[in-house]
Length: 197
Length: 192
Image 1 (tube, chains in turn brown, cyan):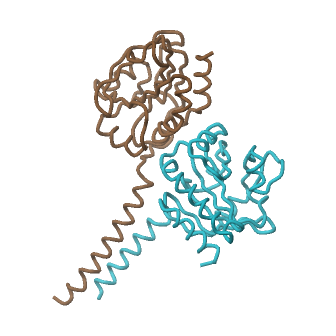
Image 2: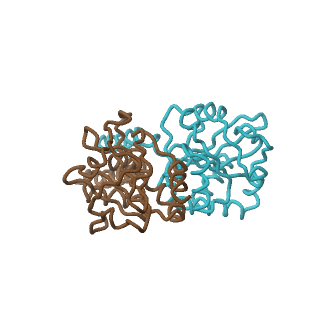
Image 3: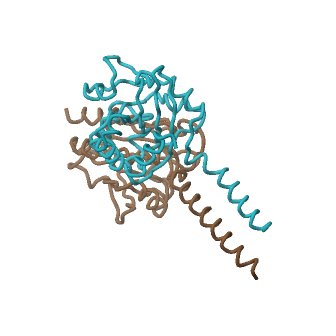
């Protein structure tokens, strides 16, 4: 009995230390690293100057968002990212989020799209801070919008792709980027500058 | 008694296995060797150049900052943890400057790992960062280190009069409390 009285505090202390360490580790280690991937695995047939395909998808904050909603009103940057909780993707939208003033100065809204389901996207985007733009789930029918835009990869994820669509609904820029790399912000902003001229 | 020893040993082993990769306090050779090789684009702003004590060179290395102690933040404009910590780090700068003995001893420098000058500028403006930030779009830091560099990483380094870089502490991740950074700086400076 005396023995167990002494053992319990030790086990408790050990457990508390382990939980603290694991909690702290979790803060930095929430991103799954799939290693280096094939830079692209699809071929879009869309071209600059063509009309952007219409879509309507679920917003993680509720409701549906369609591309048509912005027609005549805002330029749109469609940002497809491959998958939640993976490298690059987990930072791309937080970067766009702090550049809100720049996008707004070009009368532009960002729309984030991923093939993940709403609960996954909800949890993932909540730890990105307060994103100012809609994040849409292209989960079901799986990757249907990514397919429409020609950026669905063979493994069911999407490319890391950017489409700039002007207020008339025309595609002005396509960047199916190397999935392993971050598209440079200034390159995207330069495309918005070109629209405004 | 044997059980107690086993529990302590288990906790100790798990701690040693996990902790060094996440919260590192090291003055190891890896840091010294890696840091001495690195060159960064010098800030355009004359006030930043003057604060760092560098002349009109397009590039500078940490070895140029002889006799200084530098609190460096490796950040990325895209990193949400860095973004969340930015106001805390600004307060660290304020706290250090409120203490004359620290203000004269320590300078701060942010290095935007993987960020272009444009991206660093977006971050600077967004968070009104009061200390110099420089881009590292060639991923100099990440290439120099044999291990993965996570952002944010904080390094306190002392550059001796010969330009050798000695790391006094290294911390990965948020501390969330500016006072903790100041305490860590004070502790490292006193050699504890």
